[in-house]
Image (cartoon, rainbow, N blue to C red):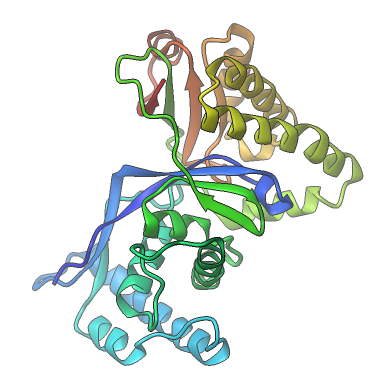
Length: 312
C-alpha cells in the first residue's frame, strides 16, 4: 500500500510572531514529501517510524475519547495498519523547520479521521480554523504545543495567509518569475534544530518587559509589513522591511541562530547582498534567505548549500 503524498512547508514569515498574533505566510514546498506506506522488507528507518506510529495511535485514541466533538478516528483500522507494519515514508528532514511532523499529521487525518473536512469543500474561515485546531491537537504529540499550521499547509497544499490567530485564509502569491534575479532560498546550517527548547527560550524571554515591547513595536511590525509586501508583490518595499526584520532577529533572537552564522547574518545586512531570517523555530535546520541578486548571494555565501524556493 502507498497513500497520497503530502508536502513539506515553509513559513516565510511569522515564526514566533504568530504566537503573539502577528501576521504570517506559509507556502507548500514540494521538494520534500512523505506518504504512509507498508513494505515487505522494511528498512531500519521504517521500523523506527512504525514504532513511533504505534505510540501516536494510542495518543490519537485518547484524543478521540477526550475531544470527540473536535475529531474522532478509525482507531481500529489505524492500529491494524500499524500492526501490519505501516510507516511514514518521508524525504522531509526532521528538525529543519520544513514541517516533517506536519506532513505526517496531514496524512493520518486524511486516511483515518471520521467526518473529515476535505480539500474539495468550500473552505470557509470556520472550516479552516476548525482544521487548524484539530491539527494543533494532533501535532502537539510531537512538539508539546502546536499551532496546527504546518499540517494545515501540508493538507491543503496551498499558501496560507495568517491575519491573526482567529483569521486565516488560503491565498495566492504572485507567480514566480523564472527569469528573475531575485530569490528566496534555504541555507543549510548542517545542524538539527529542536523546536521545544527554542520555544522554551522564547517563552522565558517573553517574561522580560523590554523583549515584549521589542516584539510588538519592531518584530511584529516588520513581519506584518513583509507579509503584506510579499502577497501584493511589492518587491522594493519588501527588501526594505526584510533588512529591518533581519536586524531585529540578529539583535534579539541570537540563541535561535547557530553561532557560526552570526557573522554571515551581519554580513548580509551590511552589504545588502542578501538578508537572512529564521525558518521555523531556529536553533539549526534551515535558515531562510532573501536576495535581489542570486548570483551575488551565491558568491557571498560560497561554500554553503543554497536551495532556491522562489524566484522574483
